[in-house]
Length: 417
Image (cartoon, rainbow, N blue to C red; front, top):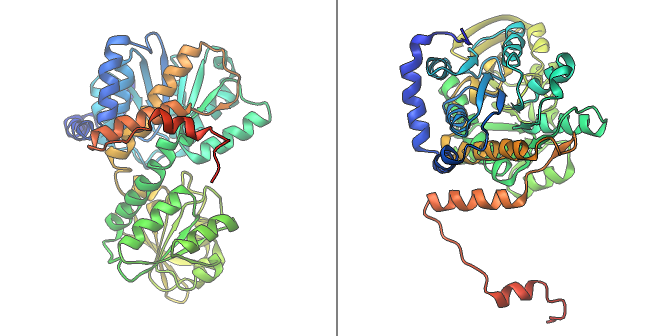
């Protein structure tokens, strides 16, 4: 078999969800109709390592319509939706993903996606690219390039590029404005709140809600928490981001201070050890702790385990840790991405632009035919504007246009007051 999933019998359920996502992703639908005629990825073999959701399935179908062969794995042990994986497998797509994979299984699945010697790679978190560079360097000579979906992955790949260690070019899909200013902000904000509510069913109104990190993802979470009636507290290491949070109406303090009063915590930093032993020791009874960053290192779970006297799962994706003094701390989704592990991930409408960027970036790499330097490359501004225009049209928006006189005025340095 060219797949391994939890239960192939879930395929029909998965197809229904994929149909729903397709109805909400008009930009990808527009591109797919074009790609079916032009086949810009004909002859390309794409290995993908990205959350297996209904939206990802729409991307995969779009890449196949463009002529590509596909092999796929999930990029997080708890983010695969088993019915979606089953639907893709039942449709003949090579996929190796199921919810609850251990570390060995996770990398086994990545290995299987490399069996067919890809010419392009697609990543969310860069584990696939790192696997090629660490264990399959011989494959790199035939890989035209790769794409990276998330902030943490792009940051690490830029570091690799700066050290001269990248073996092929990578397109920083995450950094496209139509990705990071929409997916990261509005997608993460809504889906993280969704995951917290599914795992806890608590009333958010009136709660002290602590957001660690005020980048695009943290900003989105803070915005949506405020919309739920929370008293939002932001913690930061960057004074500029901290000032932004302050001027947007949020309280800004250190995590040591926030830990004493927070009811709900969400880490969104990409950094390890954001919440550690001393924070757990000072949290109020009943505190809810979660993470929406890519890796599960932001919450030091070993520290929490060390000071707990008992632990039990009280709801799906919700573990209760009882401390020696009787206080309880609730950890959601084992410290993994709460929006994907405890919910369904970002809404289809916002992933429409992110995955359109993925498709166009892969086509750009294929057309470059290996002429790009082995470094991290930004997507062109023209692509951002094209996708924003397409998306705006689907929501009924209209744009004004500058006259030629106005265009000339922009560069007229002789014009004064």
